[in-house]
Amino acid sequence: MKSLEYELKRLRKSWRPGVTARRPRWRVILLLVALANPFLAAQISASTQEITAALRSRQFDTALKLLRPQLEHFPRDAKLWTLDGIALSGKGEKKQALVVYRKALGFSPDYLPALEGAAQIEYELGDQDASQHLQQILEQRPNDPTAHAMLAVLQYRQGDCAAAVKNFKEGGRLLDSQPKALQQYGDCLIHIKEVEKAISVFERALAESNRDASAYLRLGSAQLMAHRPQDAIATLQPLVENNRADSDVLDLLASAYEAEGNTPDAVRTLRQAIVAAPRNVDLYVDFANLSMDHQSYQVGIDMVDAGIGLQPKAAPLYVARGILYVQLAQYDRAEDDFEKADELDPKRSMGSAAEGLVAVQENDPERALATVRAKLRKSPHDAFLLYLKAQILTERGPDPGSADFREALQSAKTATTLDPSLGAARDVLAKLYLQAGQNPAAIAQCRKALQNDPKDQTALYHLIQALRKSGQTKELPGLLTRLADLRAEATKKEAEHNRYKLVEQLPAATEKIQP
Image (tube, rainbow, N blue to C red; front, side, top):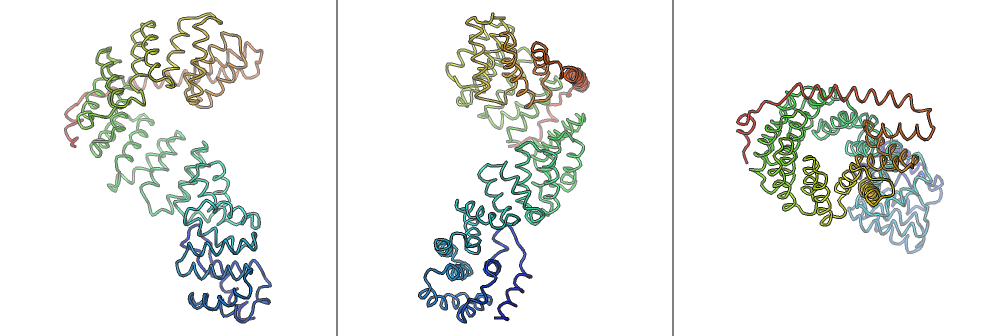
């Protein structure tokens, strides 16, 4: 008995927990048998000691042979079935071991060693019962970092980031040996909009990832989301210096340069990205957006032309070029591109929404409304088209209670239901509620719009109006100061954009772009 106790203590000292199957094997389960029942050594027979010794020396076939007569005499003994599961798992027969662990749990549902063994294999196999068994383990050992970490990974895979974040946190420093789990933790923090916490987690992941490029990319993305472009540049620069920057890294780096106000380097880097991945449609769209920001419409068109030459069936490229044509008042060409986009990708109706914008841009509200309604007959659940219809009707100044007003209100409501993040639709809806005297409803829409975009000046202005009309003046001084700051910031940003225009250098931009 003393020798068995000594061996169990030795195993306890030598074992270190891990998240994946690479760490806990038969030794872990054997240890848990001892921990779960401190009186086991006094109860087991000499045969069981032989079984334990066989398992310890990894003689799994011998252990199984010794277990057979024991199980015949004690067929409902959960401990014996758990040892059987250990032996099978040690031989690599995971599915059969899982059957045996579940049999043990049938006799003793809360038996911790069997729960651990079953949960470990279920986790490896992606079995849905793993979550339930991990929860049962945590009921008995609420501070078990391994169980928390494993449960967090499963919740991440299921898309339940709110629950996953709590369990990742309980995993503590154990996650430092699991860079992939750390990246999943950071992804979930981004999903629930805790960006600064995500940056700290991604920094940990980068330190443990052997400098994997995806770890740099995740950290740089989070830093840019947190409006820290200089940090993002510093994070991504080592990849460029070591020739490890792919098109995704270069695209993100270009965004960081532009956010920092360094447009020349943004243009240069984005062109490098396009040369590196000439068939990546998103890169051409990003270049078109950059051209829009700096009113360099023809430069953007030339670059998108090069992309269409390589990807003639990419609908987003025609939409991007069409929008640039609108800025040059080349409406016929714009409409041709939008029609082409709808022909290539009719389900997304990208061209339809853009074509409605063309009609608005031409300052012909009647034609714009007719165009949007025609497009909605083909795509009645397009949130952006519904928003456009509400916007056009609202600009006609309908009286509250009129048919146009009711149609605009319903259209804006439906748009926000279909796409809750569409701030422009919430702005229109808030304006209509204000006109109807429904101030609480207007306040609610403004707050939702500002939650999605804290810099939405229209929503902030409508919120100030609605609060004032409701007699709620406590927030007004702070909101007015915030609105003034946003307007000053927007004016400064516009001036910076106008200060730098892209110089049209079509050969330099496209000569190296090859299929």
